[in-house]
Image 1 (cartoon, rainbow, N blue to C red):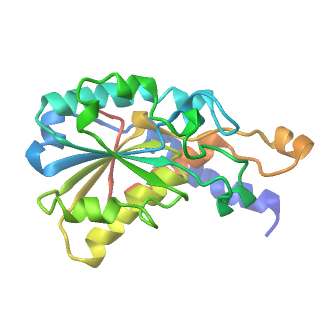
Image 2: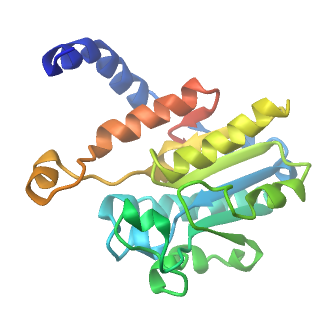
Length: 236
């Protein structure tokens, strides 16, 4: 298959993907949380090193912080009381640094929750779960946190990056539900999720991999929907 045939073959899907993305509905808070005491927000990597400063920080990713803070306030007011923050907290010699520049090292400012979330009055009631890889449940406390809350059946997943940690987190919840026959609902509000952009020309000039944010953001949202998750524009 040539590059030209790949592009031509993908075009009808890409056109449909664009239409799907633009038509995502808003979900009212009361419909997202008919039983708020059984719901949780799972936030991944909404920390300084991805949203504000550092080798992997992205202004595009940083723009999801205000809607995430607004969402957390809205669902807290609706009665939701379970919020977990999964956050890169790498060892100084993290194996992951073989693929990515060093980032979010334990004890650094980069590994800290962004200020907008720390200012929320209920921030002390959130649980911070450090992680040392893209996956949210490998050598973390996520599964234990879930086991301590067997009443949970609805999960709102937010954070970055759409195609990396957010995807891994949402898929872990969805596949755990599938494997163990749990009737869990997983909701992805697209305005609270994004990924970074690295143009092809930059990758060619500097080395490394290109990362077309618009395309990967859309494709991975679609893939989460394909796996039975509810992808919506926003929860309001």
